[in-house]
Length: 295
Ligand SMILES: C[S@@+](CC[C@H](N)C(=O)[O-])C[C@H]1O[C@@H](n2cnc3c(N)ncnc32)[C@H](O)[C@@H]1O
Image 1 (cartoon, rainbow, N blue to C red):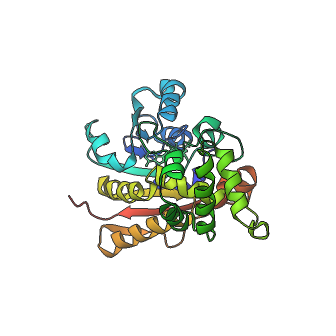
Image 2 (cartoon, rainbow, N blue to C red; image 1 turned 120 degrees about the vertical axis):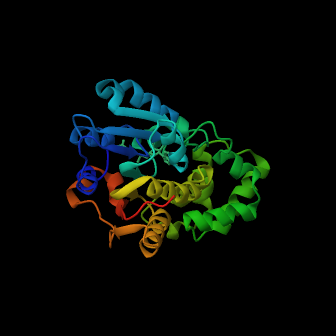
Image 3 (cartoon, helix red, strand yellow; image 1 turned 60 degrees about the vertical axis):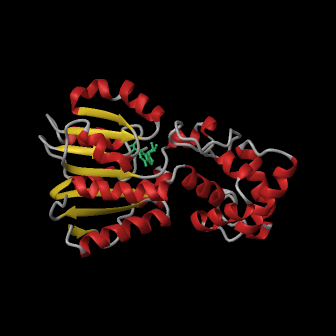
């Protein structure tokens, strides 16, 4: 279920004749709303690094919208190049709805979830080489502790890395359940808290497997560059590290005069939305309005 759809539309204010980018089209929820509001001839370029999402959108969404919806498989860090291939050099609005879709989380074979047993994969783009299994079985204990600390903000990083290192001496770690069990055993029960003890470990691995922080920095830069003067970029983030990058990049753009205005505080979903859609509970929406174009 797409998050904060109407809040995003209030910021982007889609209009006919304009070109929009949905840099994380997923299963098309936001993109379809932009297409509806920019009727009869607004165009959406939908990008996603997940080929399964792209194939689904091509089959289920594109037929209804024809040439008004252009679908591209790739990383939003290459947004400029992907638009260039379509002869587009500037756009009227961009949305980046970060993280994973419910379909990705629920598909056991993708290995994102510790709730069901699946292969330890976590690649959003299956063409890339690095998997979560590669990290937990081949990286040094120190490097594993380091990423758990940095990207998972995990206080038991050292203990979990030790648990992984001890386990893999006996047996290769190939499944999500195996890893979740190792993490559980590495954290004293009294520190488990409200969320599943493996949540932070899985988040850290996903961030590293998909190079999420670097791609986000590049994607924001590309997006800001592509915007026409007076037009807006919207970003929905789902954890503090992402939100920090968005906040800092927007602030820098404002200080440098590239942005005319930015959201002062993140916009949060309403109570009703959170009740209907649990995934919305950690969402934060920020926007930037372009001032001048630099090249
Ligand atoms: C929360 S979902 C988007 C849901 C979408 N807005 C909808 O309404 O269905 C996030 C999507 O972003 C994609 N994604 C994440 N990082 C990406 C990146 N760097 N480049 C392109 N797509 C990315 C994921 O594959 C996933 O499909």
